[in-house]
Length: 382
Image (cartoon, rainbow, N blue to C red; front, side, top):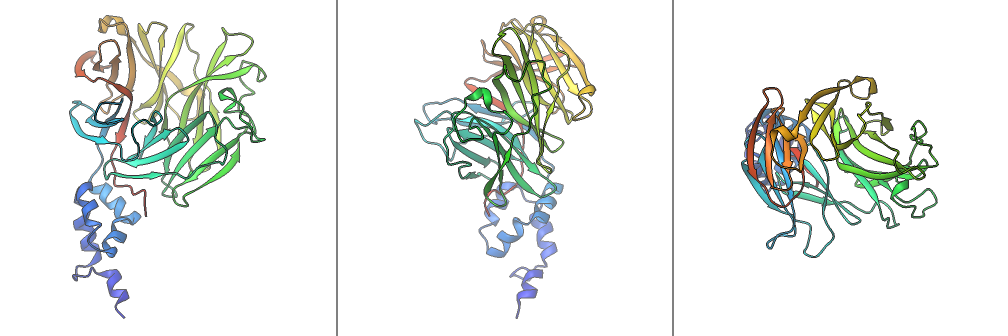
């Protein structure tokens, strides 16, 4: 009898639109507590409309995430810091790992969710509301090598994970060098359906200067990066018969169309090596540096997907800035400053590339990986 009225009003008689407006002004942790009030509140707080409304009232501030190595207290720990001051906002113990287990690897971040892999297990975690989900296995076969990335599809409001494996089209382990080989299965996970589906890897390697028969993958560098609703990975290639010949490419997965393509890199100076794929003002960006990391070149793609739009944004002489020998460009901060890590001293620096000012952000010991992060109330369960 009263079902229609219950949809419009809360049990206490508060009109639903008023209630949403009030609750949307609470912070993420308070909302998590409100979910326990009643089933109707839980349903309301997890509705896409409410999540968008909360986002409107609480525009997220970009943060920095540091994945720390094992300590006496934790197997690993996670720190979320202010991206401009480096002040620690929160520190977290991982809710899904135990001591003595395989190394944890950061896959990437999008829409407030971090992705981690640990052996053949994949986890999604929203540390803002401390909610995580372990994904079901993508394949009955245990493969030795995988490349994984994640992203949020705003068109379908679905979270997706993409996994490339070293299992070939016949179901046999083929080794890391064949992960992106034509015909190999590519697995796509949908959070909405909590299931994987399979597609075949297209032929994207035929245009390389290295013959396909001699082409081998040497490494995939860093986390996946989401730009223009596409997940991106940068892959380094070698030549089986000519060890001095190498190349690189950026693999892109469109979250909406679920198509994979290869983005060509700009012409890089001889002797320079790729260091990191990241974002700069919403554009795809990567760093290159010399063998001894004495200088860094910053490349930015003006128009996503257009290989002709690459341009060199800055060249920075690290030796003139810092007295250390192992300085690595790590990321761009929200204020467009370059984040630099000095591995031999454990000091981290923020460099204003426009005004050429360097700021020491202090020591941070035992950092395995770092990435930029934007908090959200995105729910992984229910």
